[in-house]
Image 1: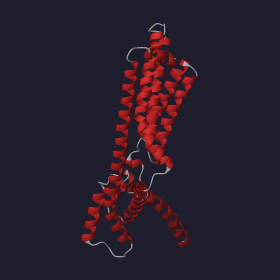
Image 2: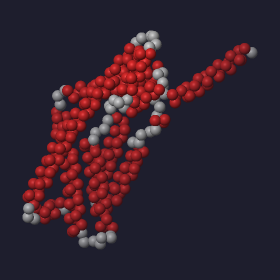
Image 3: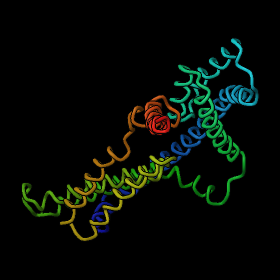
Image 4: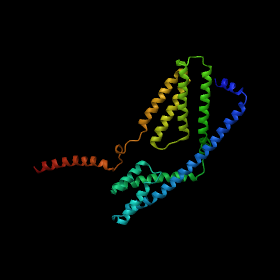
Length: 295
């Protein structure tokens, strides 16, 4: 069907001009996308440098504190508080670490400070590695990806344009009633394929890190793969669209952020009642055995 309506379009006067205009538009979008990708990468590196610069002071103070035996002086305590407050503005630190820093500001418990120190050191090491990789020469695969990544925007736009053009020409050729089910199926297929284009673009252009990023990418891949059902025929369009909507709705549950109270880290105050309860359970048998011995 594509060659038929494309031949009809090419036979119209001025078709070459329209084609050149479309290619020029896609080239402009590619150049704009490449510029934005480069700027986004530079902003990311700038945020990493700022984060490491801010976090170094806190890391140094925590390291000195762990290697000595005496207590903090009032001046050192104020410097530690200032360093922790400064780290709250670090853009590249994770949300759990920010929560730990916020709790340590409220309560300078040594156990919490030790846990926060380890988490901060771990994240700073990862950021330093990412910053160091930026200074190295690009390997062959990364060089190819640098060229292909900006093509996501023009490719998605071209796919959407071809899809809509195909729908319009198909609707002109179909001799069915507007209110019939056969007239609705092409629209359902277009909606399903548009969703595929959108999530294919997200997979191509927006790589995510971490566990939640992996879940998001897997859901996006499954939603995009649902479009393979269209190979069966036009009758599969409602099933493909329905399956995509089910996966889309389930994504809110699978990738949603849990409340802070539901995910306390090790050493958090919310875990202390549990520890106290376990301590009481251990003490009670000892008291019973002591009473029995006394008798």
